[in-house]
Length: 248
Image (cartoon, rainbow, N blue to C red; front, side):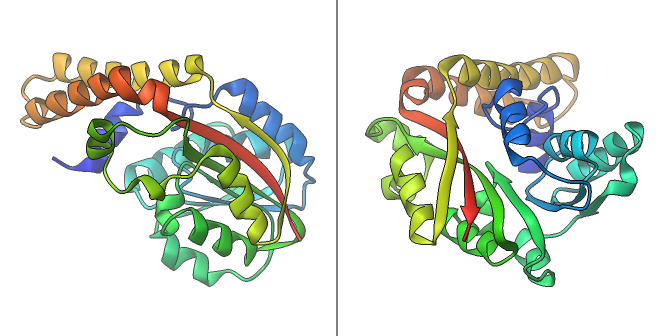
């Protein structure tokens, strides 16, 4: 089964691919206080909803890096449908390769829920500090442990416990790179439930209406185990924070 196919179906009805509410995203966009000539880059932009809202509000110049072709195609279509395609460049390429082609030229660097695209949280911070101008903003969205993960959940989650930090450590780590924390907000249980249940429902609906798809057996097995782990462990264990920093 193609993991990108699974993700595309699971996120079919999501505006954002993370457990964040429209209210929180609107607050981030408001706090950035951008101008029409400001330049923004978004790593792992998905369908680009955050950038599209920034363009509609500020008419800024945006660059979206999205490796998955279906998401990049949908991003362009969304921008075209909203009459703002001229304000956004969509780069369909691996983020580590794409970001090397830019100098320190952006007023805002965004990476929400996509730090894996640049090799992890620390690498993402380092990469964006080198591409965002001094005095510019860096907006990060990152998971964190709300409490020590159970061994069963950690095994399912994959990786090591130390790969994920606490909420405070996410901020302190950015400070070590010289960033100044300006604002933060974390996902509520409602935010998580809204995200996870819609994620699950999209797979269930797709497989119900497309039983001829040979991937459905594997997709259903995966999403049902995922849902079980979320209800049993994840809902109380994993957090998600959004952070705004100033690059100094």
